[in-house]
Image 1 (cartoon, protein in one colour):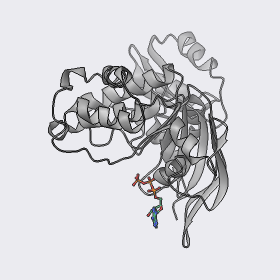
Image 2 (tube, rainbow, N blue to C red):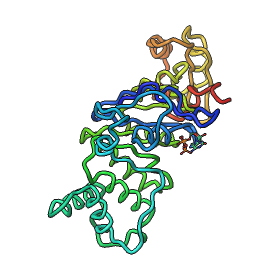
Image 3 (cartoon, helix red, strand yellow):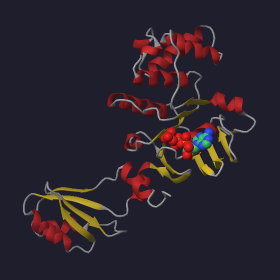
Image 4 (tube, rainbow, N blue to C red):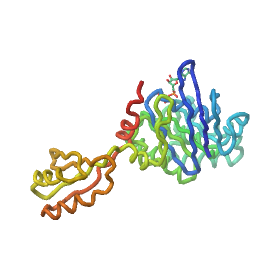
Length: 309
Ligand SMILES: Nc1ncnc2c1ncn2[C@@H]1O[C@H](COP(=O)(O)OP(=O)(O)OP(=O)(O)O)[C@@H](O)[C@H]1O
């Protein structure tokens, strides 16, 4: 649905996007993560045919961005990070205005506008003025506008920025829904954990380079140098920690203020079944035994180590 090959954009000496290869299928919700200025917007604008690459290719549903901009734009819904709304227009008028621009005419126009309002949960504001909506509501109307022409591909540039936690959750719910509708979605953010549970895939970009691209879990795994186990025992925590220090798999053992023993395993160790066994054999009663989760924030910091110039 979206394919890029060595997609590149330069501004003078600055390489804003450097030979990015992407391949996304229907139903993929791709979290495009990177700090400010890393090249997310530039990449999306090239795919949306709003900016010419210096080098490389991009295809949307098999159509090259070169020479097919009309068709490609028809296939794409692009939501920029900042977009204006007009004054003195109700939500319905606003959507109908854009639906008309997409040549959705007759009774189908109102129907489609209503469907999109339902999808973003905004039917209750259909008669409100667009310049009187909250930021979260404005974002949702922006998304409704992006969906009007039933695009196969959605490019959403920081749709959750500046939203309160509740509005963020709603945007995430919408992203999931778009994946279920088999759309191909690229959604950018510099807030990492925000995307972890809604994206099927994640790519991390830094200084124009796509450092990682893959399944969310796979990326987390790559980011994790070694496994850390979190263990609690019913009593005799210090004694248990001393025993764990003797384990062949353990690199270091610490106990935090809440009595959780953190056992950092040696790099490459994946099988640690001997550890719970040794605890049980020594008469300890484990009440907690789990691998520490790596969140996207940690993953990003690990994976971008040394890339900063
Ligand atoms: N028109 C332009 N002229 C010169 N440099 C530009 C232009 N547009 C973008 N850049 C530079 O290209 C780099 C990538 O910018 P881009 O907007 O793609 O980043 P981004 O990842 O979307 O950032 P943000 O999270 O801040 O939106 C930045 O260093 C930016 O300053």
